[in-house]
Image (tube, rainbow, N blue to C red; front, top):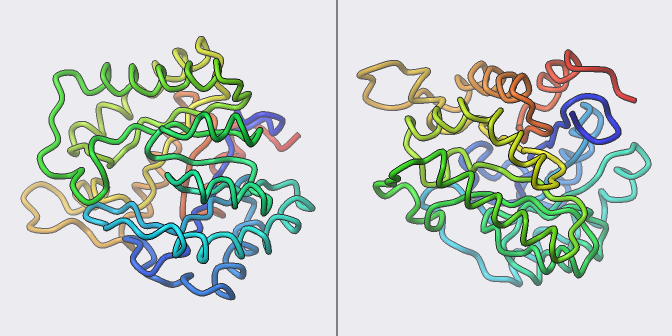
Amino acid sequence: MGPGVGRPLVMGVLNVTPDSFSDGGLYATYDAAVAHGLELIEQGADVVDVGGESSRPGAEPVAVDVELARVVPVVEALAPRAAAAGVRISVDTVKPEVARAAAGAGARLVNDISASLWEVAAELGVGWVAMHMRGEPRSMQDDPRYEDVVGEVHAFVLERARSARAAGVEEVWVDPGIGFGKTVAHNLALLHHVGELVREASAAGCAGVLVATSRKRFLGVLAAGAGAPVPAPVPERAEGSLATAASAMVAGAGMVRVHDVAATVQVARLYGPRA
């Protein structure tokens, strides 16, 4: 369950990018991003995750100054209104400069797909999410292979979590990185073992496990069915997104990262009322 909430937390995705796989630049301007962030708060998000660099498969990295210009003004605008509603802002970044600037603007959590910024989180006194990724976004789906995907992913994120706790990060989340350098079979195996990761993360002193499946390609593959030439499009992945979020919650995940906040909040409320 989410800390102080009595149910799993819902992290709403706010992509301030022109090339997201899921919402393709809908919120790339300051006004559109702030408006959508406020909408996510109104829909019941516990955390609004602001990202200025796409991490979709094949995405190219962006320059620090570009990411700062996208992210920091939005965080600055949303943070006071989020705080008034009991909501936190997180920043989805792998860059120390962006993490520091976003924290200065009011972000209280660093969602780190590189699992490399724990010392920055300790320095800033903010929470940190350690996610597993094989390679980097532009190449991560080029024939990913594992001997034991569950064992390797769990060992990696738990090692990073222990390093973060030793460095002084009080709030550490671990994320198995669904869709980040994984096949459909890898993703399903990791989802099947979320409960195991929850127990291991608790023993390591973590705040909990974050699971992010929302709208991802493997759900499109499953929705399209065996033998389909292409995955089902993003609008047809809502059911799979909700189903996998619910499955993760049943297994004990403390937070899910989603695009469809209102519907997911309804699911999360099945696991206990807001405190």
